[in-house]
Image 1 (spheres, rainbow, N blue to C red):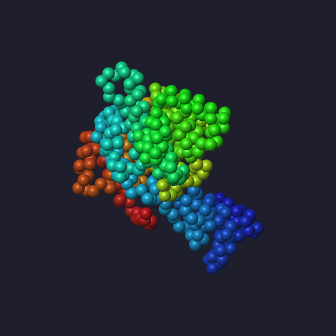
Image 2 (image 1 turned 90 degrees about the horizontal axis):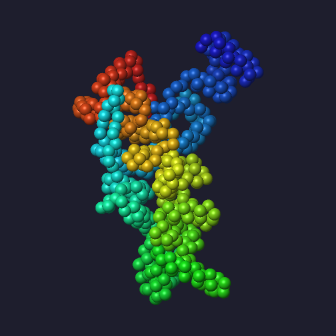
Length: 518
């Protein structure tokens, strides 16, 4: 400690204790008593010494290192789950290690999902080299390829629906004559309608639970109609010997003349106050027949509301855009219309726990499926808002689906890209690389680094990854990996040699010992 620092400490102690003690003249026998006397106040200024002596921070594989501080709550971050207050027994000199929680601890299929998706892309990718820096060329890939590649046991229901929705919205429609524009729109609408049927059928039990089971099965009939199962709804009415209702339901879908007639009938009933004599369940059927869908969807989820508007509210020839626009207008003007909140904030969500709920305390994040629908119908809709990780799943640092969707939407289909171009793209790629490193699959991190747009950044990231991990390759596999990376992925041979040389020098540092274990 030089004289300047000693004077600063003297002045600090004087301000804290009201008296100046010359530390250079304190006998060893009294030094402990002195330190005990001022230890409580040193807590207030210890940040100065910490700032001068502790520089670790982030470690390998997503580990965060910090020096503990007695009786001080740890800093909360968006990527470290909240922890209990550090006990008074914790000493200032203890170093704390934290493992970043990328996905929910209950998720056991994380690596399997990553392997399946990236293996598919790797098989369809070609590697090139420019100015000594490797890069990748994207090749043809469809959303149906992703759907076929995944096992439904390893991806959850929401992700499975995500890829099926993307297939409905954007995958090519194979027709003999590509000039039949109307037919293509009809096929596209039919795909979207089928997706809604699948999605809503999964929610039928929730809809029944919400409304209860009626003695005349009208709730069951309405539940069938939420997933466009008109035949089953009619058969249920026939079994209930309600033949008039069965006849009406059979004419429900896409018949504008029936809507007009039923609108006139409802108007007459309201004028004569006969509507007060009709049960609420039957009123819902008559409102549906008149095309007034939003009068019947209170309590239903937003997907069901949009789909019922498309089936029963819009004309048969209206595109999907009309149904989505009608829903947008309705939800902004009525509290009875469900908002498109993300799935884990829905009333019947089966999400076990949300470690990151404090990131969205108001629960206002919209669901990824809604964002994808908006992207397909609005050319000005922001891709940044659509691809936030929390719009898809609970974990804010799981960028797998975000990166895959951007890869497909921007690189393969060329539909939309981030507003500021390559900057956000590269940031997303780097976050995905961090995730792969944290999960211990650094080989895929090397592959994903090839997608970085900026050549210098791509080169530096690749070189750093090799420096950090090439020594982890088993000796018997080093040569095979080296040949594969150089010949297939076009990595520079010099990078491997330099990475191995750096690690060799690190091992030879005299007195280097590992004091802390992870």
